[in-house]
Length: 99
Image 1: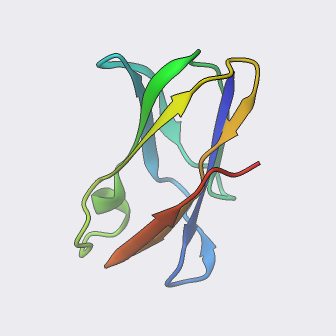
Image 2: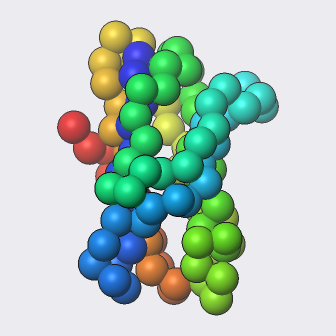
């Protein structure tokens, strides 16, 4: 299974570069990093099961209502790619299963 994310700043209409993200599985951190200049992280291979992508939105948007966004998802097919985008603003966020 491979995992990627793409974080976009809805206020500026630009990628959220430098945002800290960690991926957790069964209570432990399996990967962590920062989004690149295009707001992306890719190439993580955490395996099957339930995972949590934790986005440190408070460090990126200091005045945000949501200092952390946690997206919990299940990987049923360990051979499939899982893309989890995040659209971010100070008072709202949205996500979906991407391709």
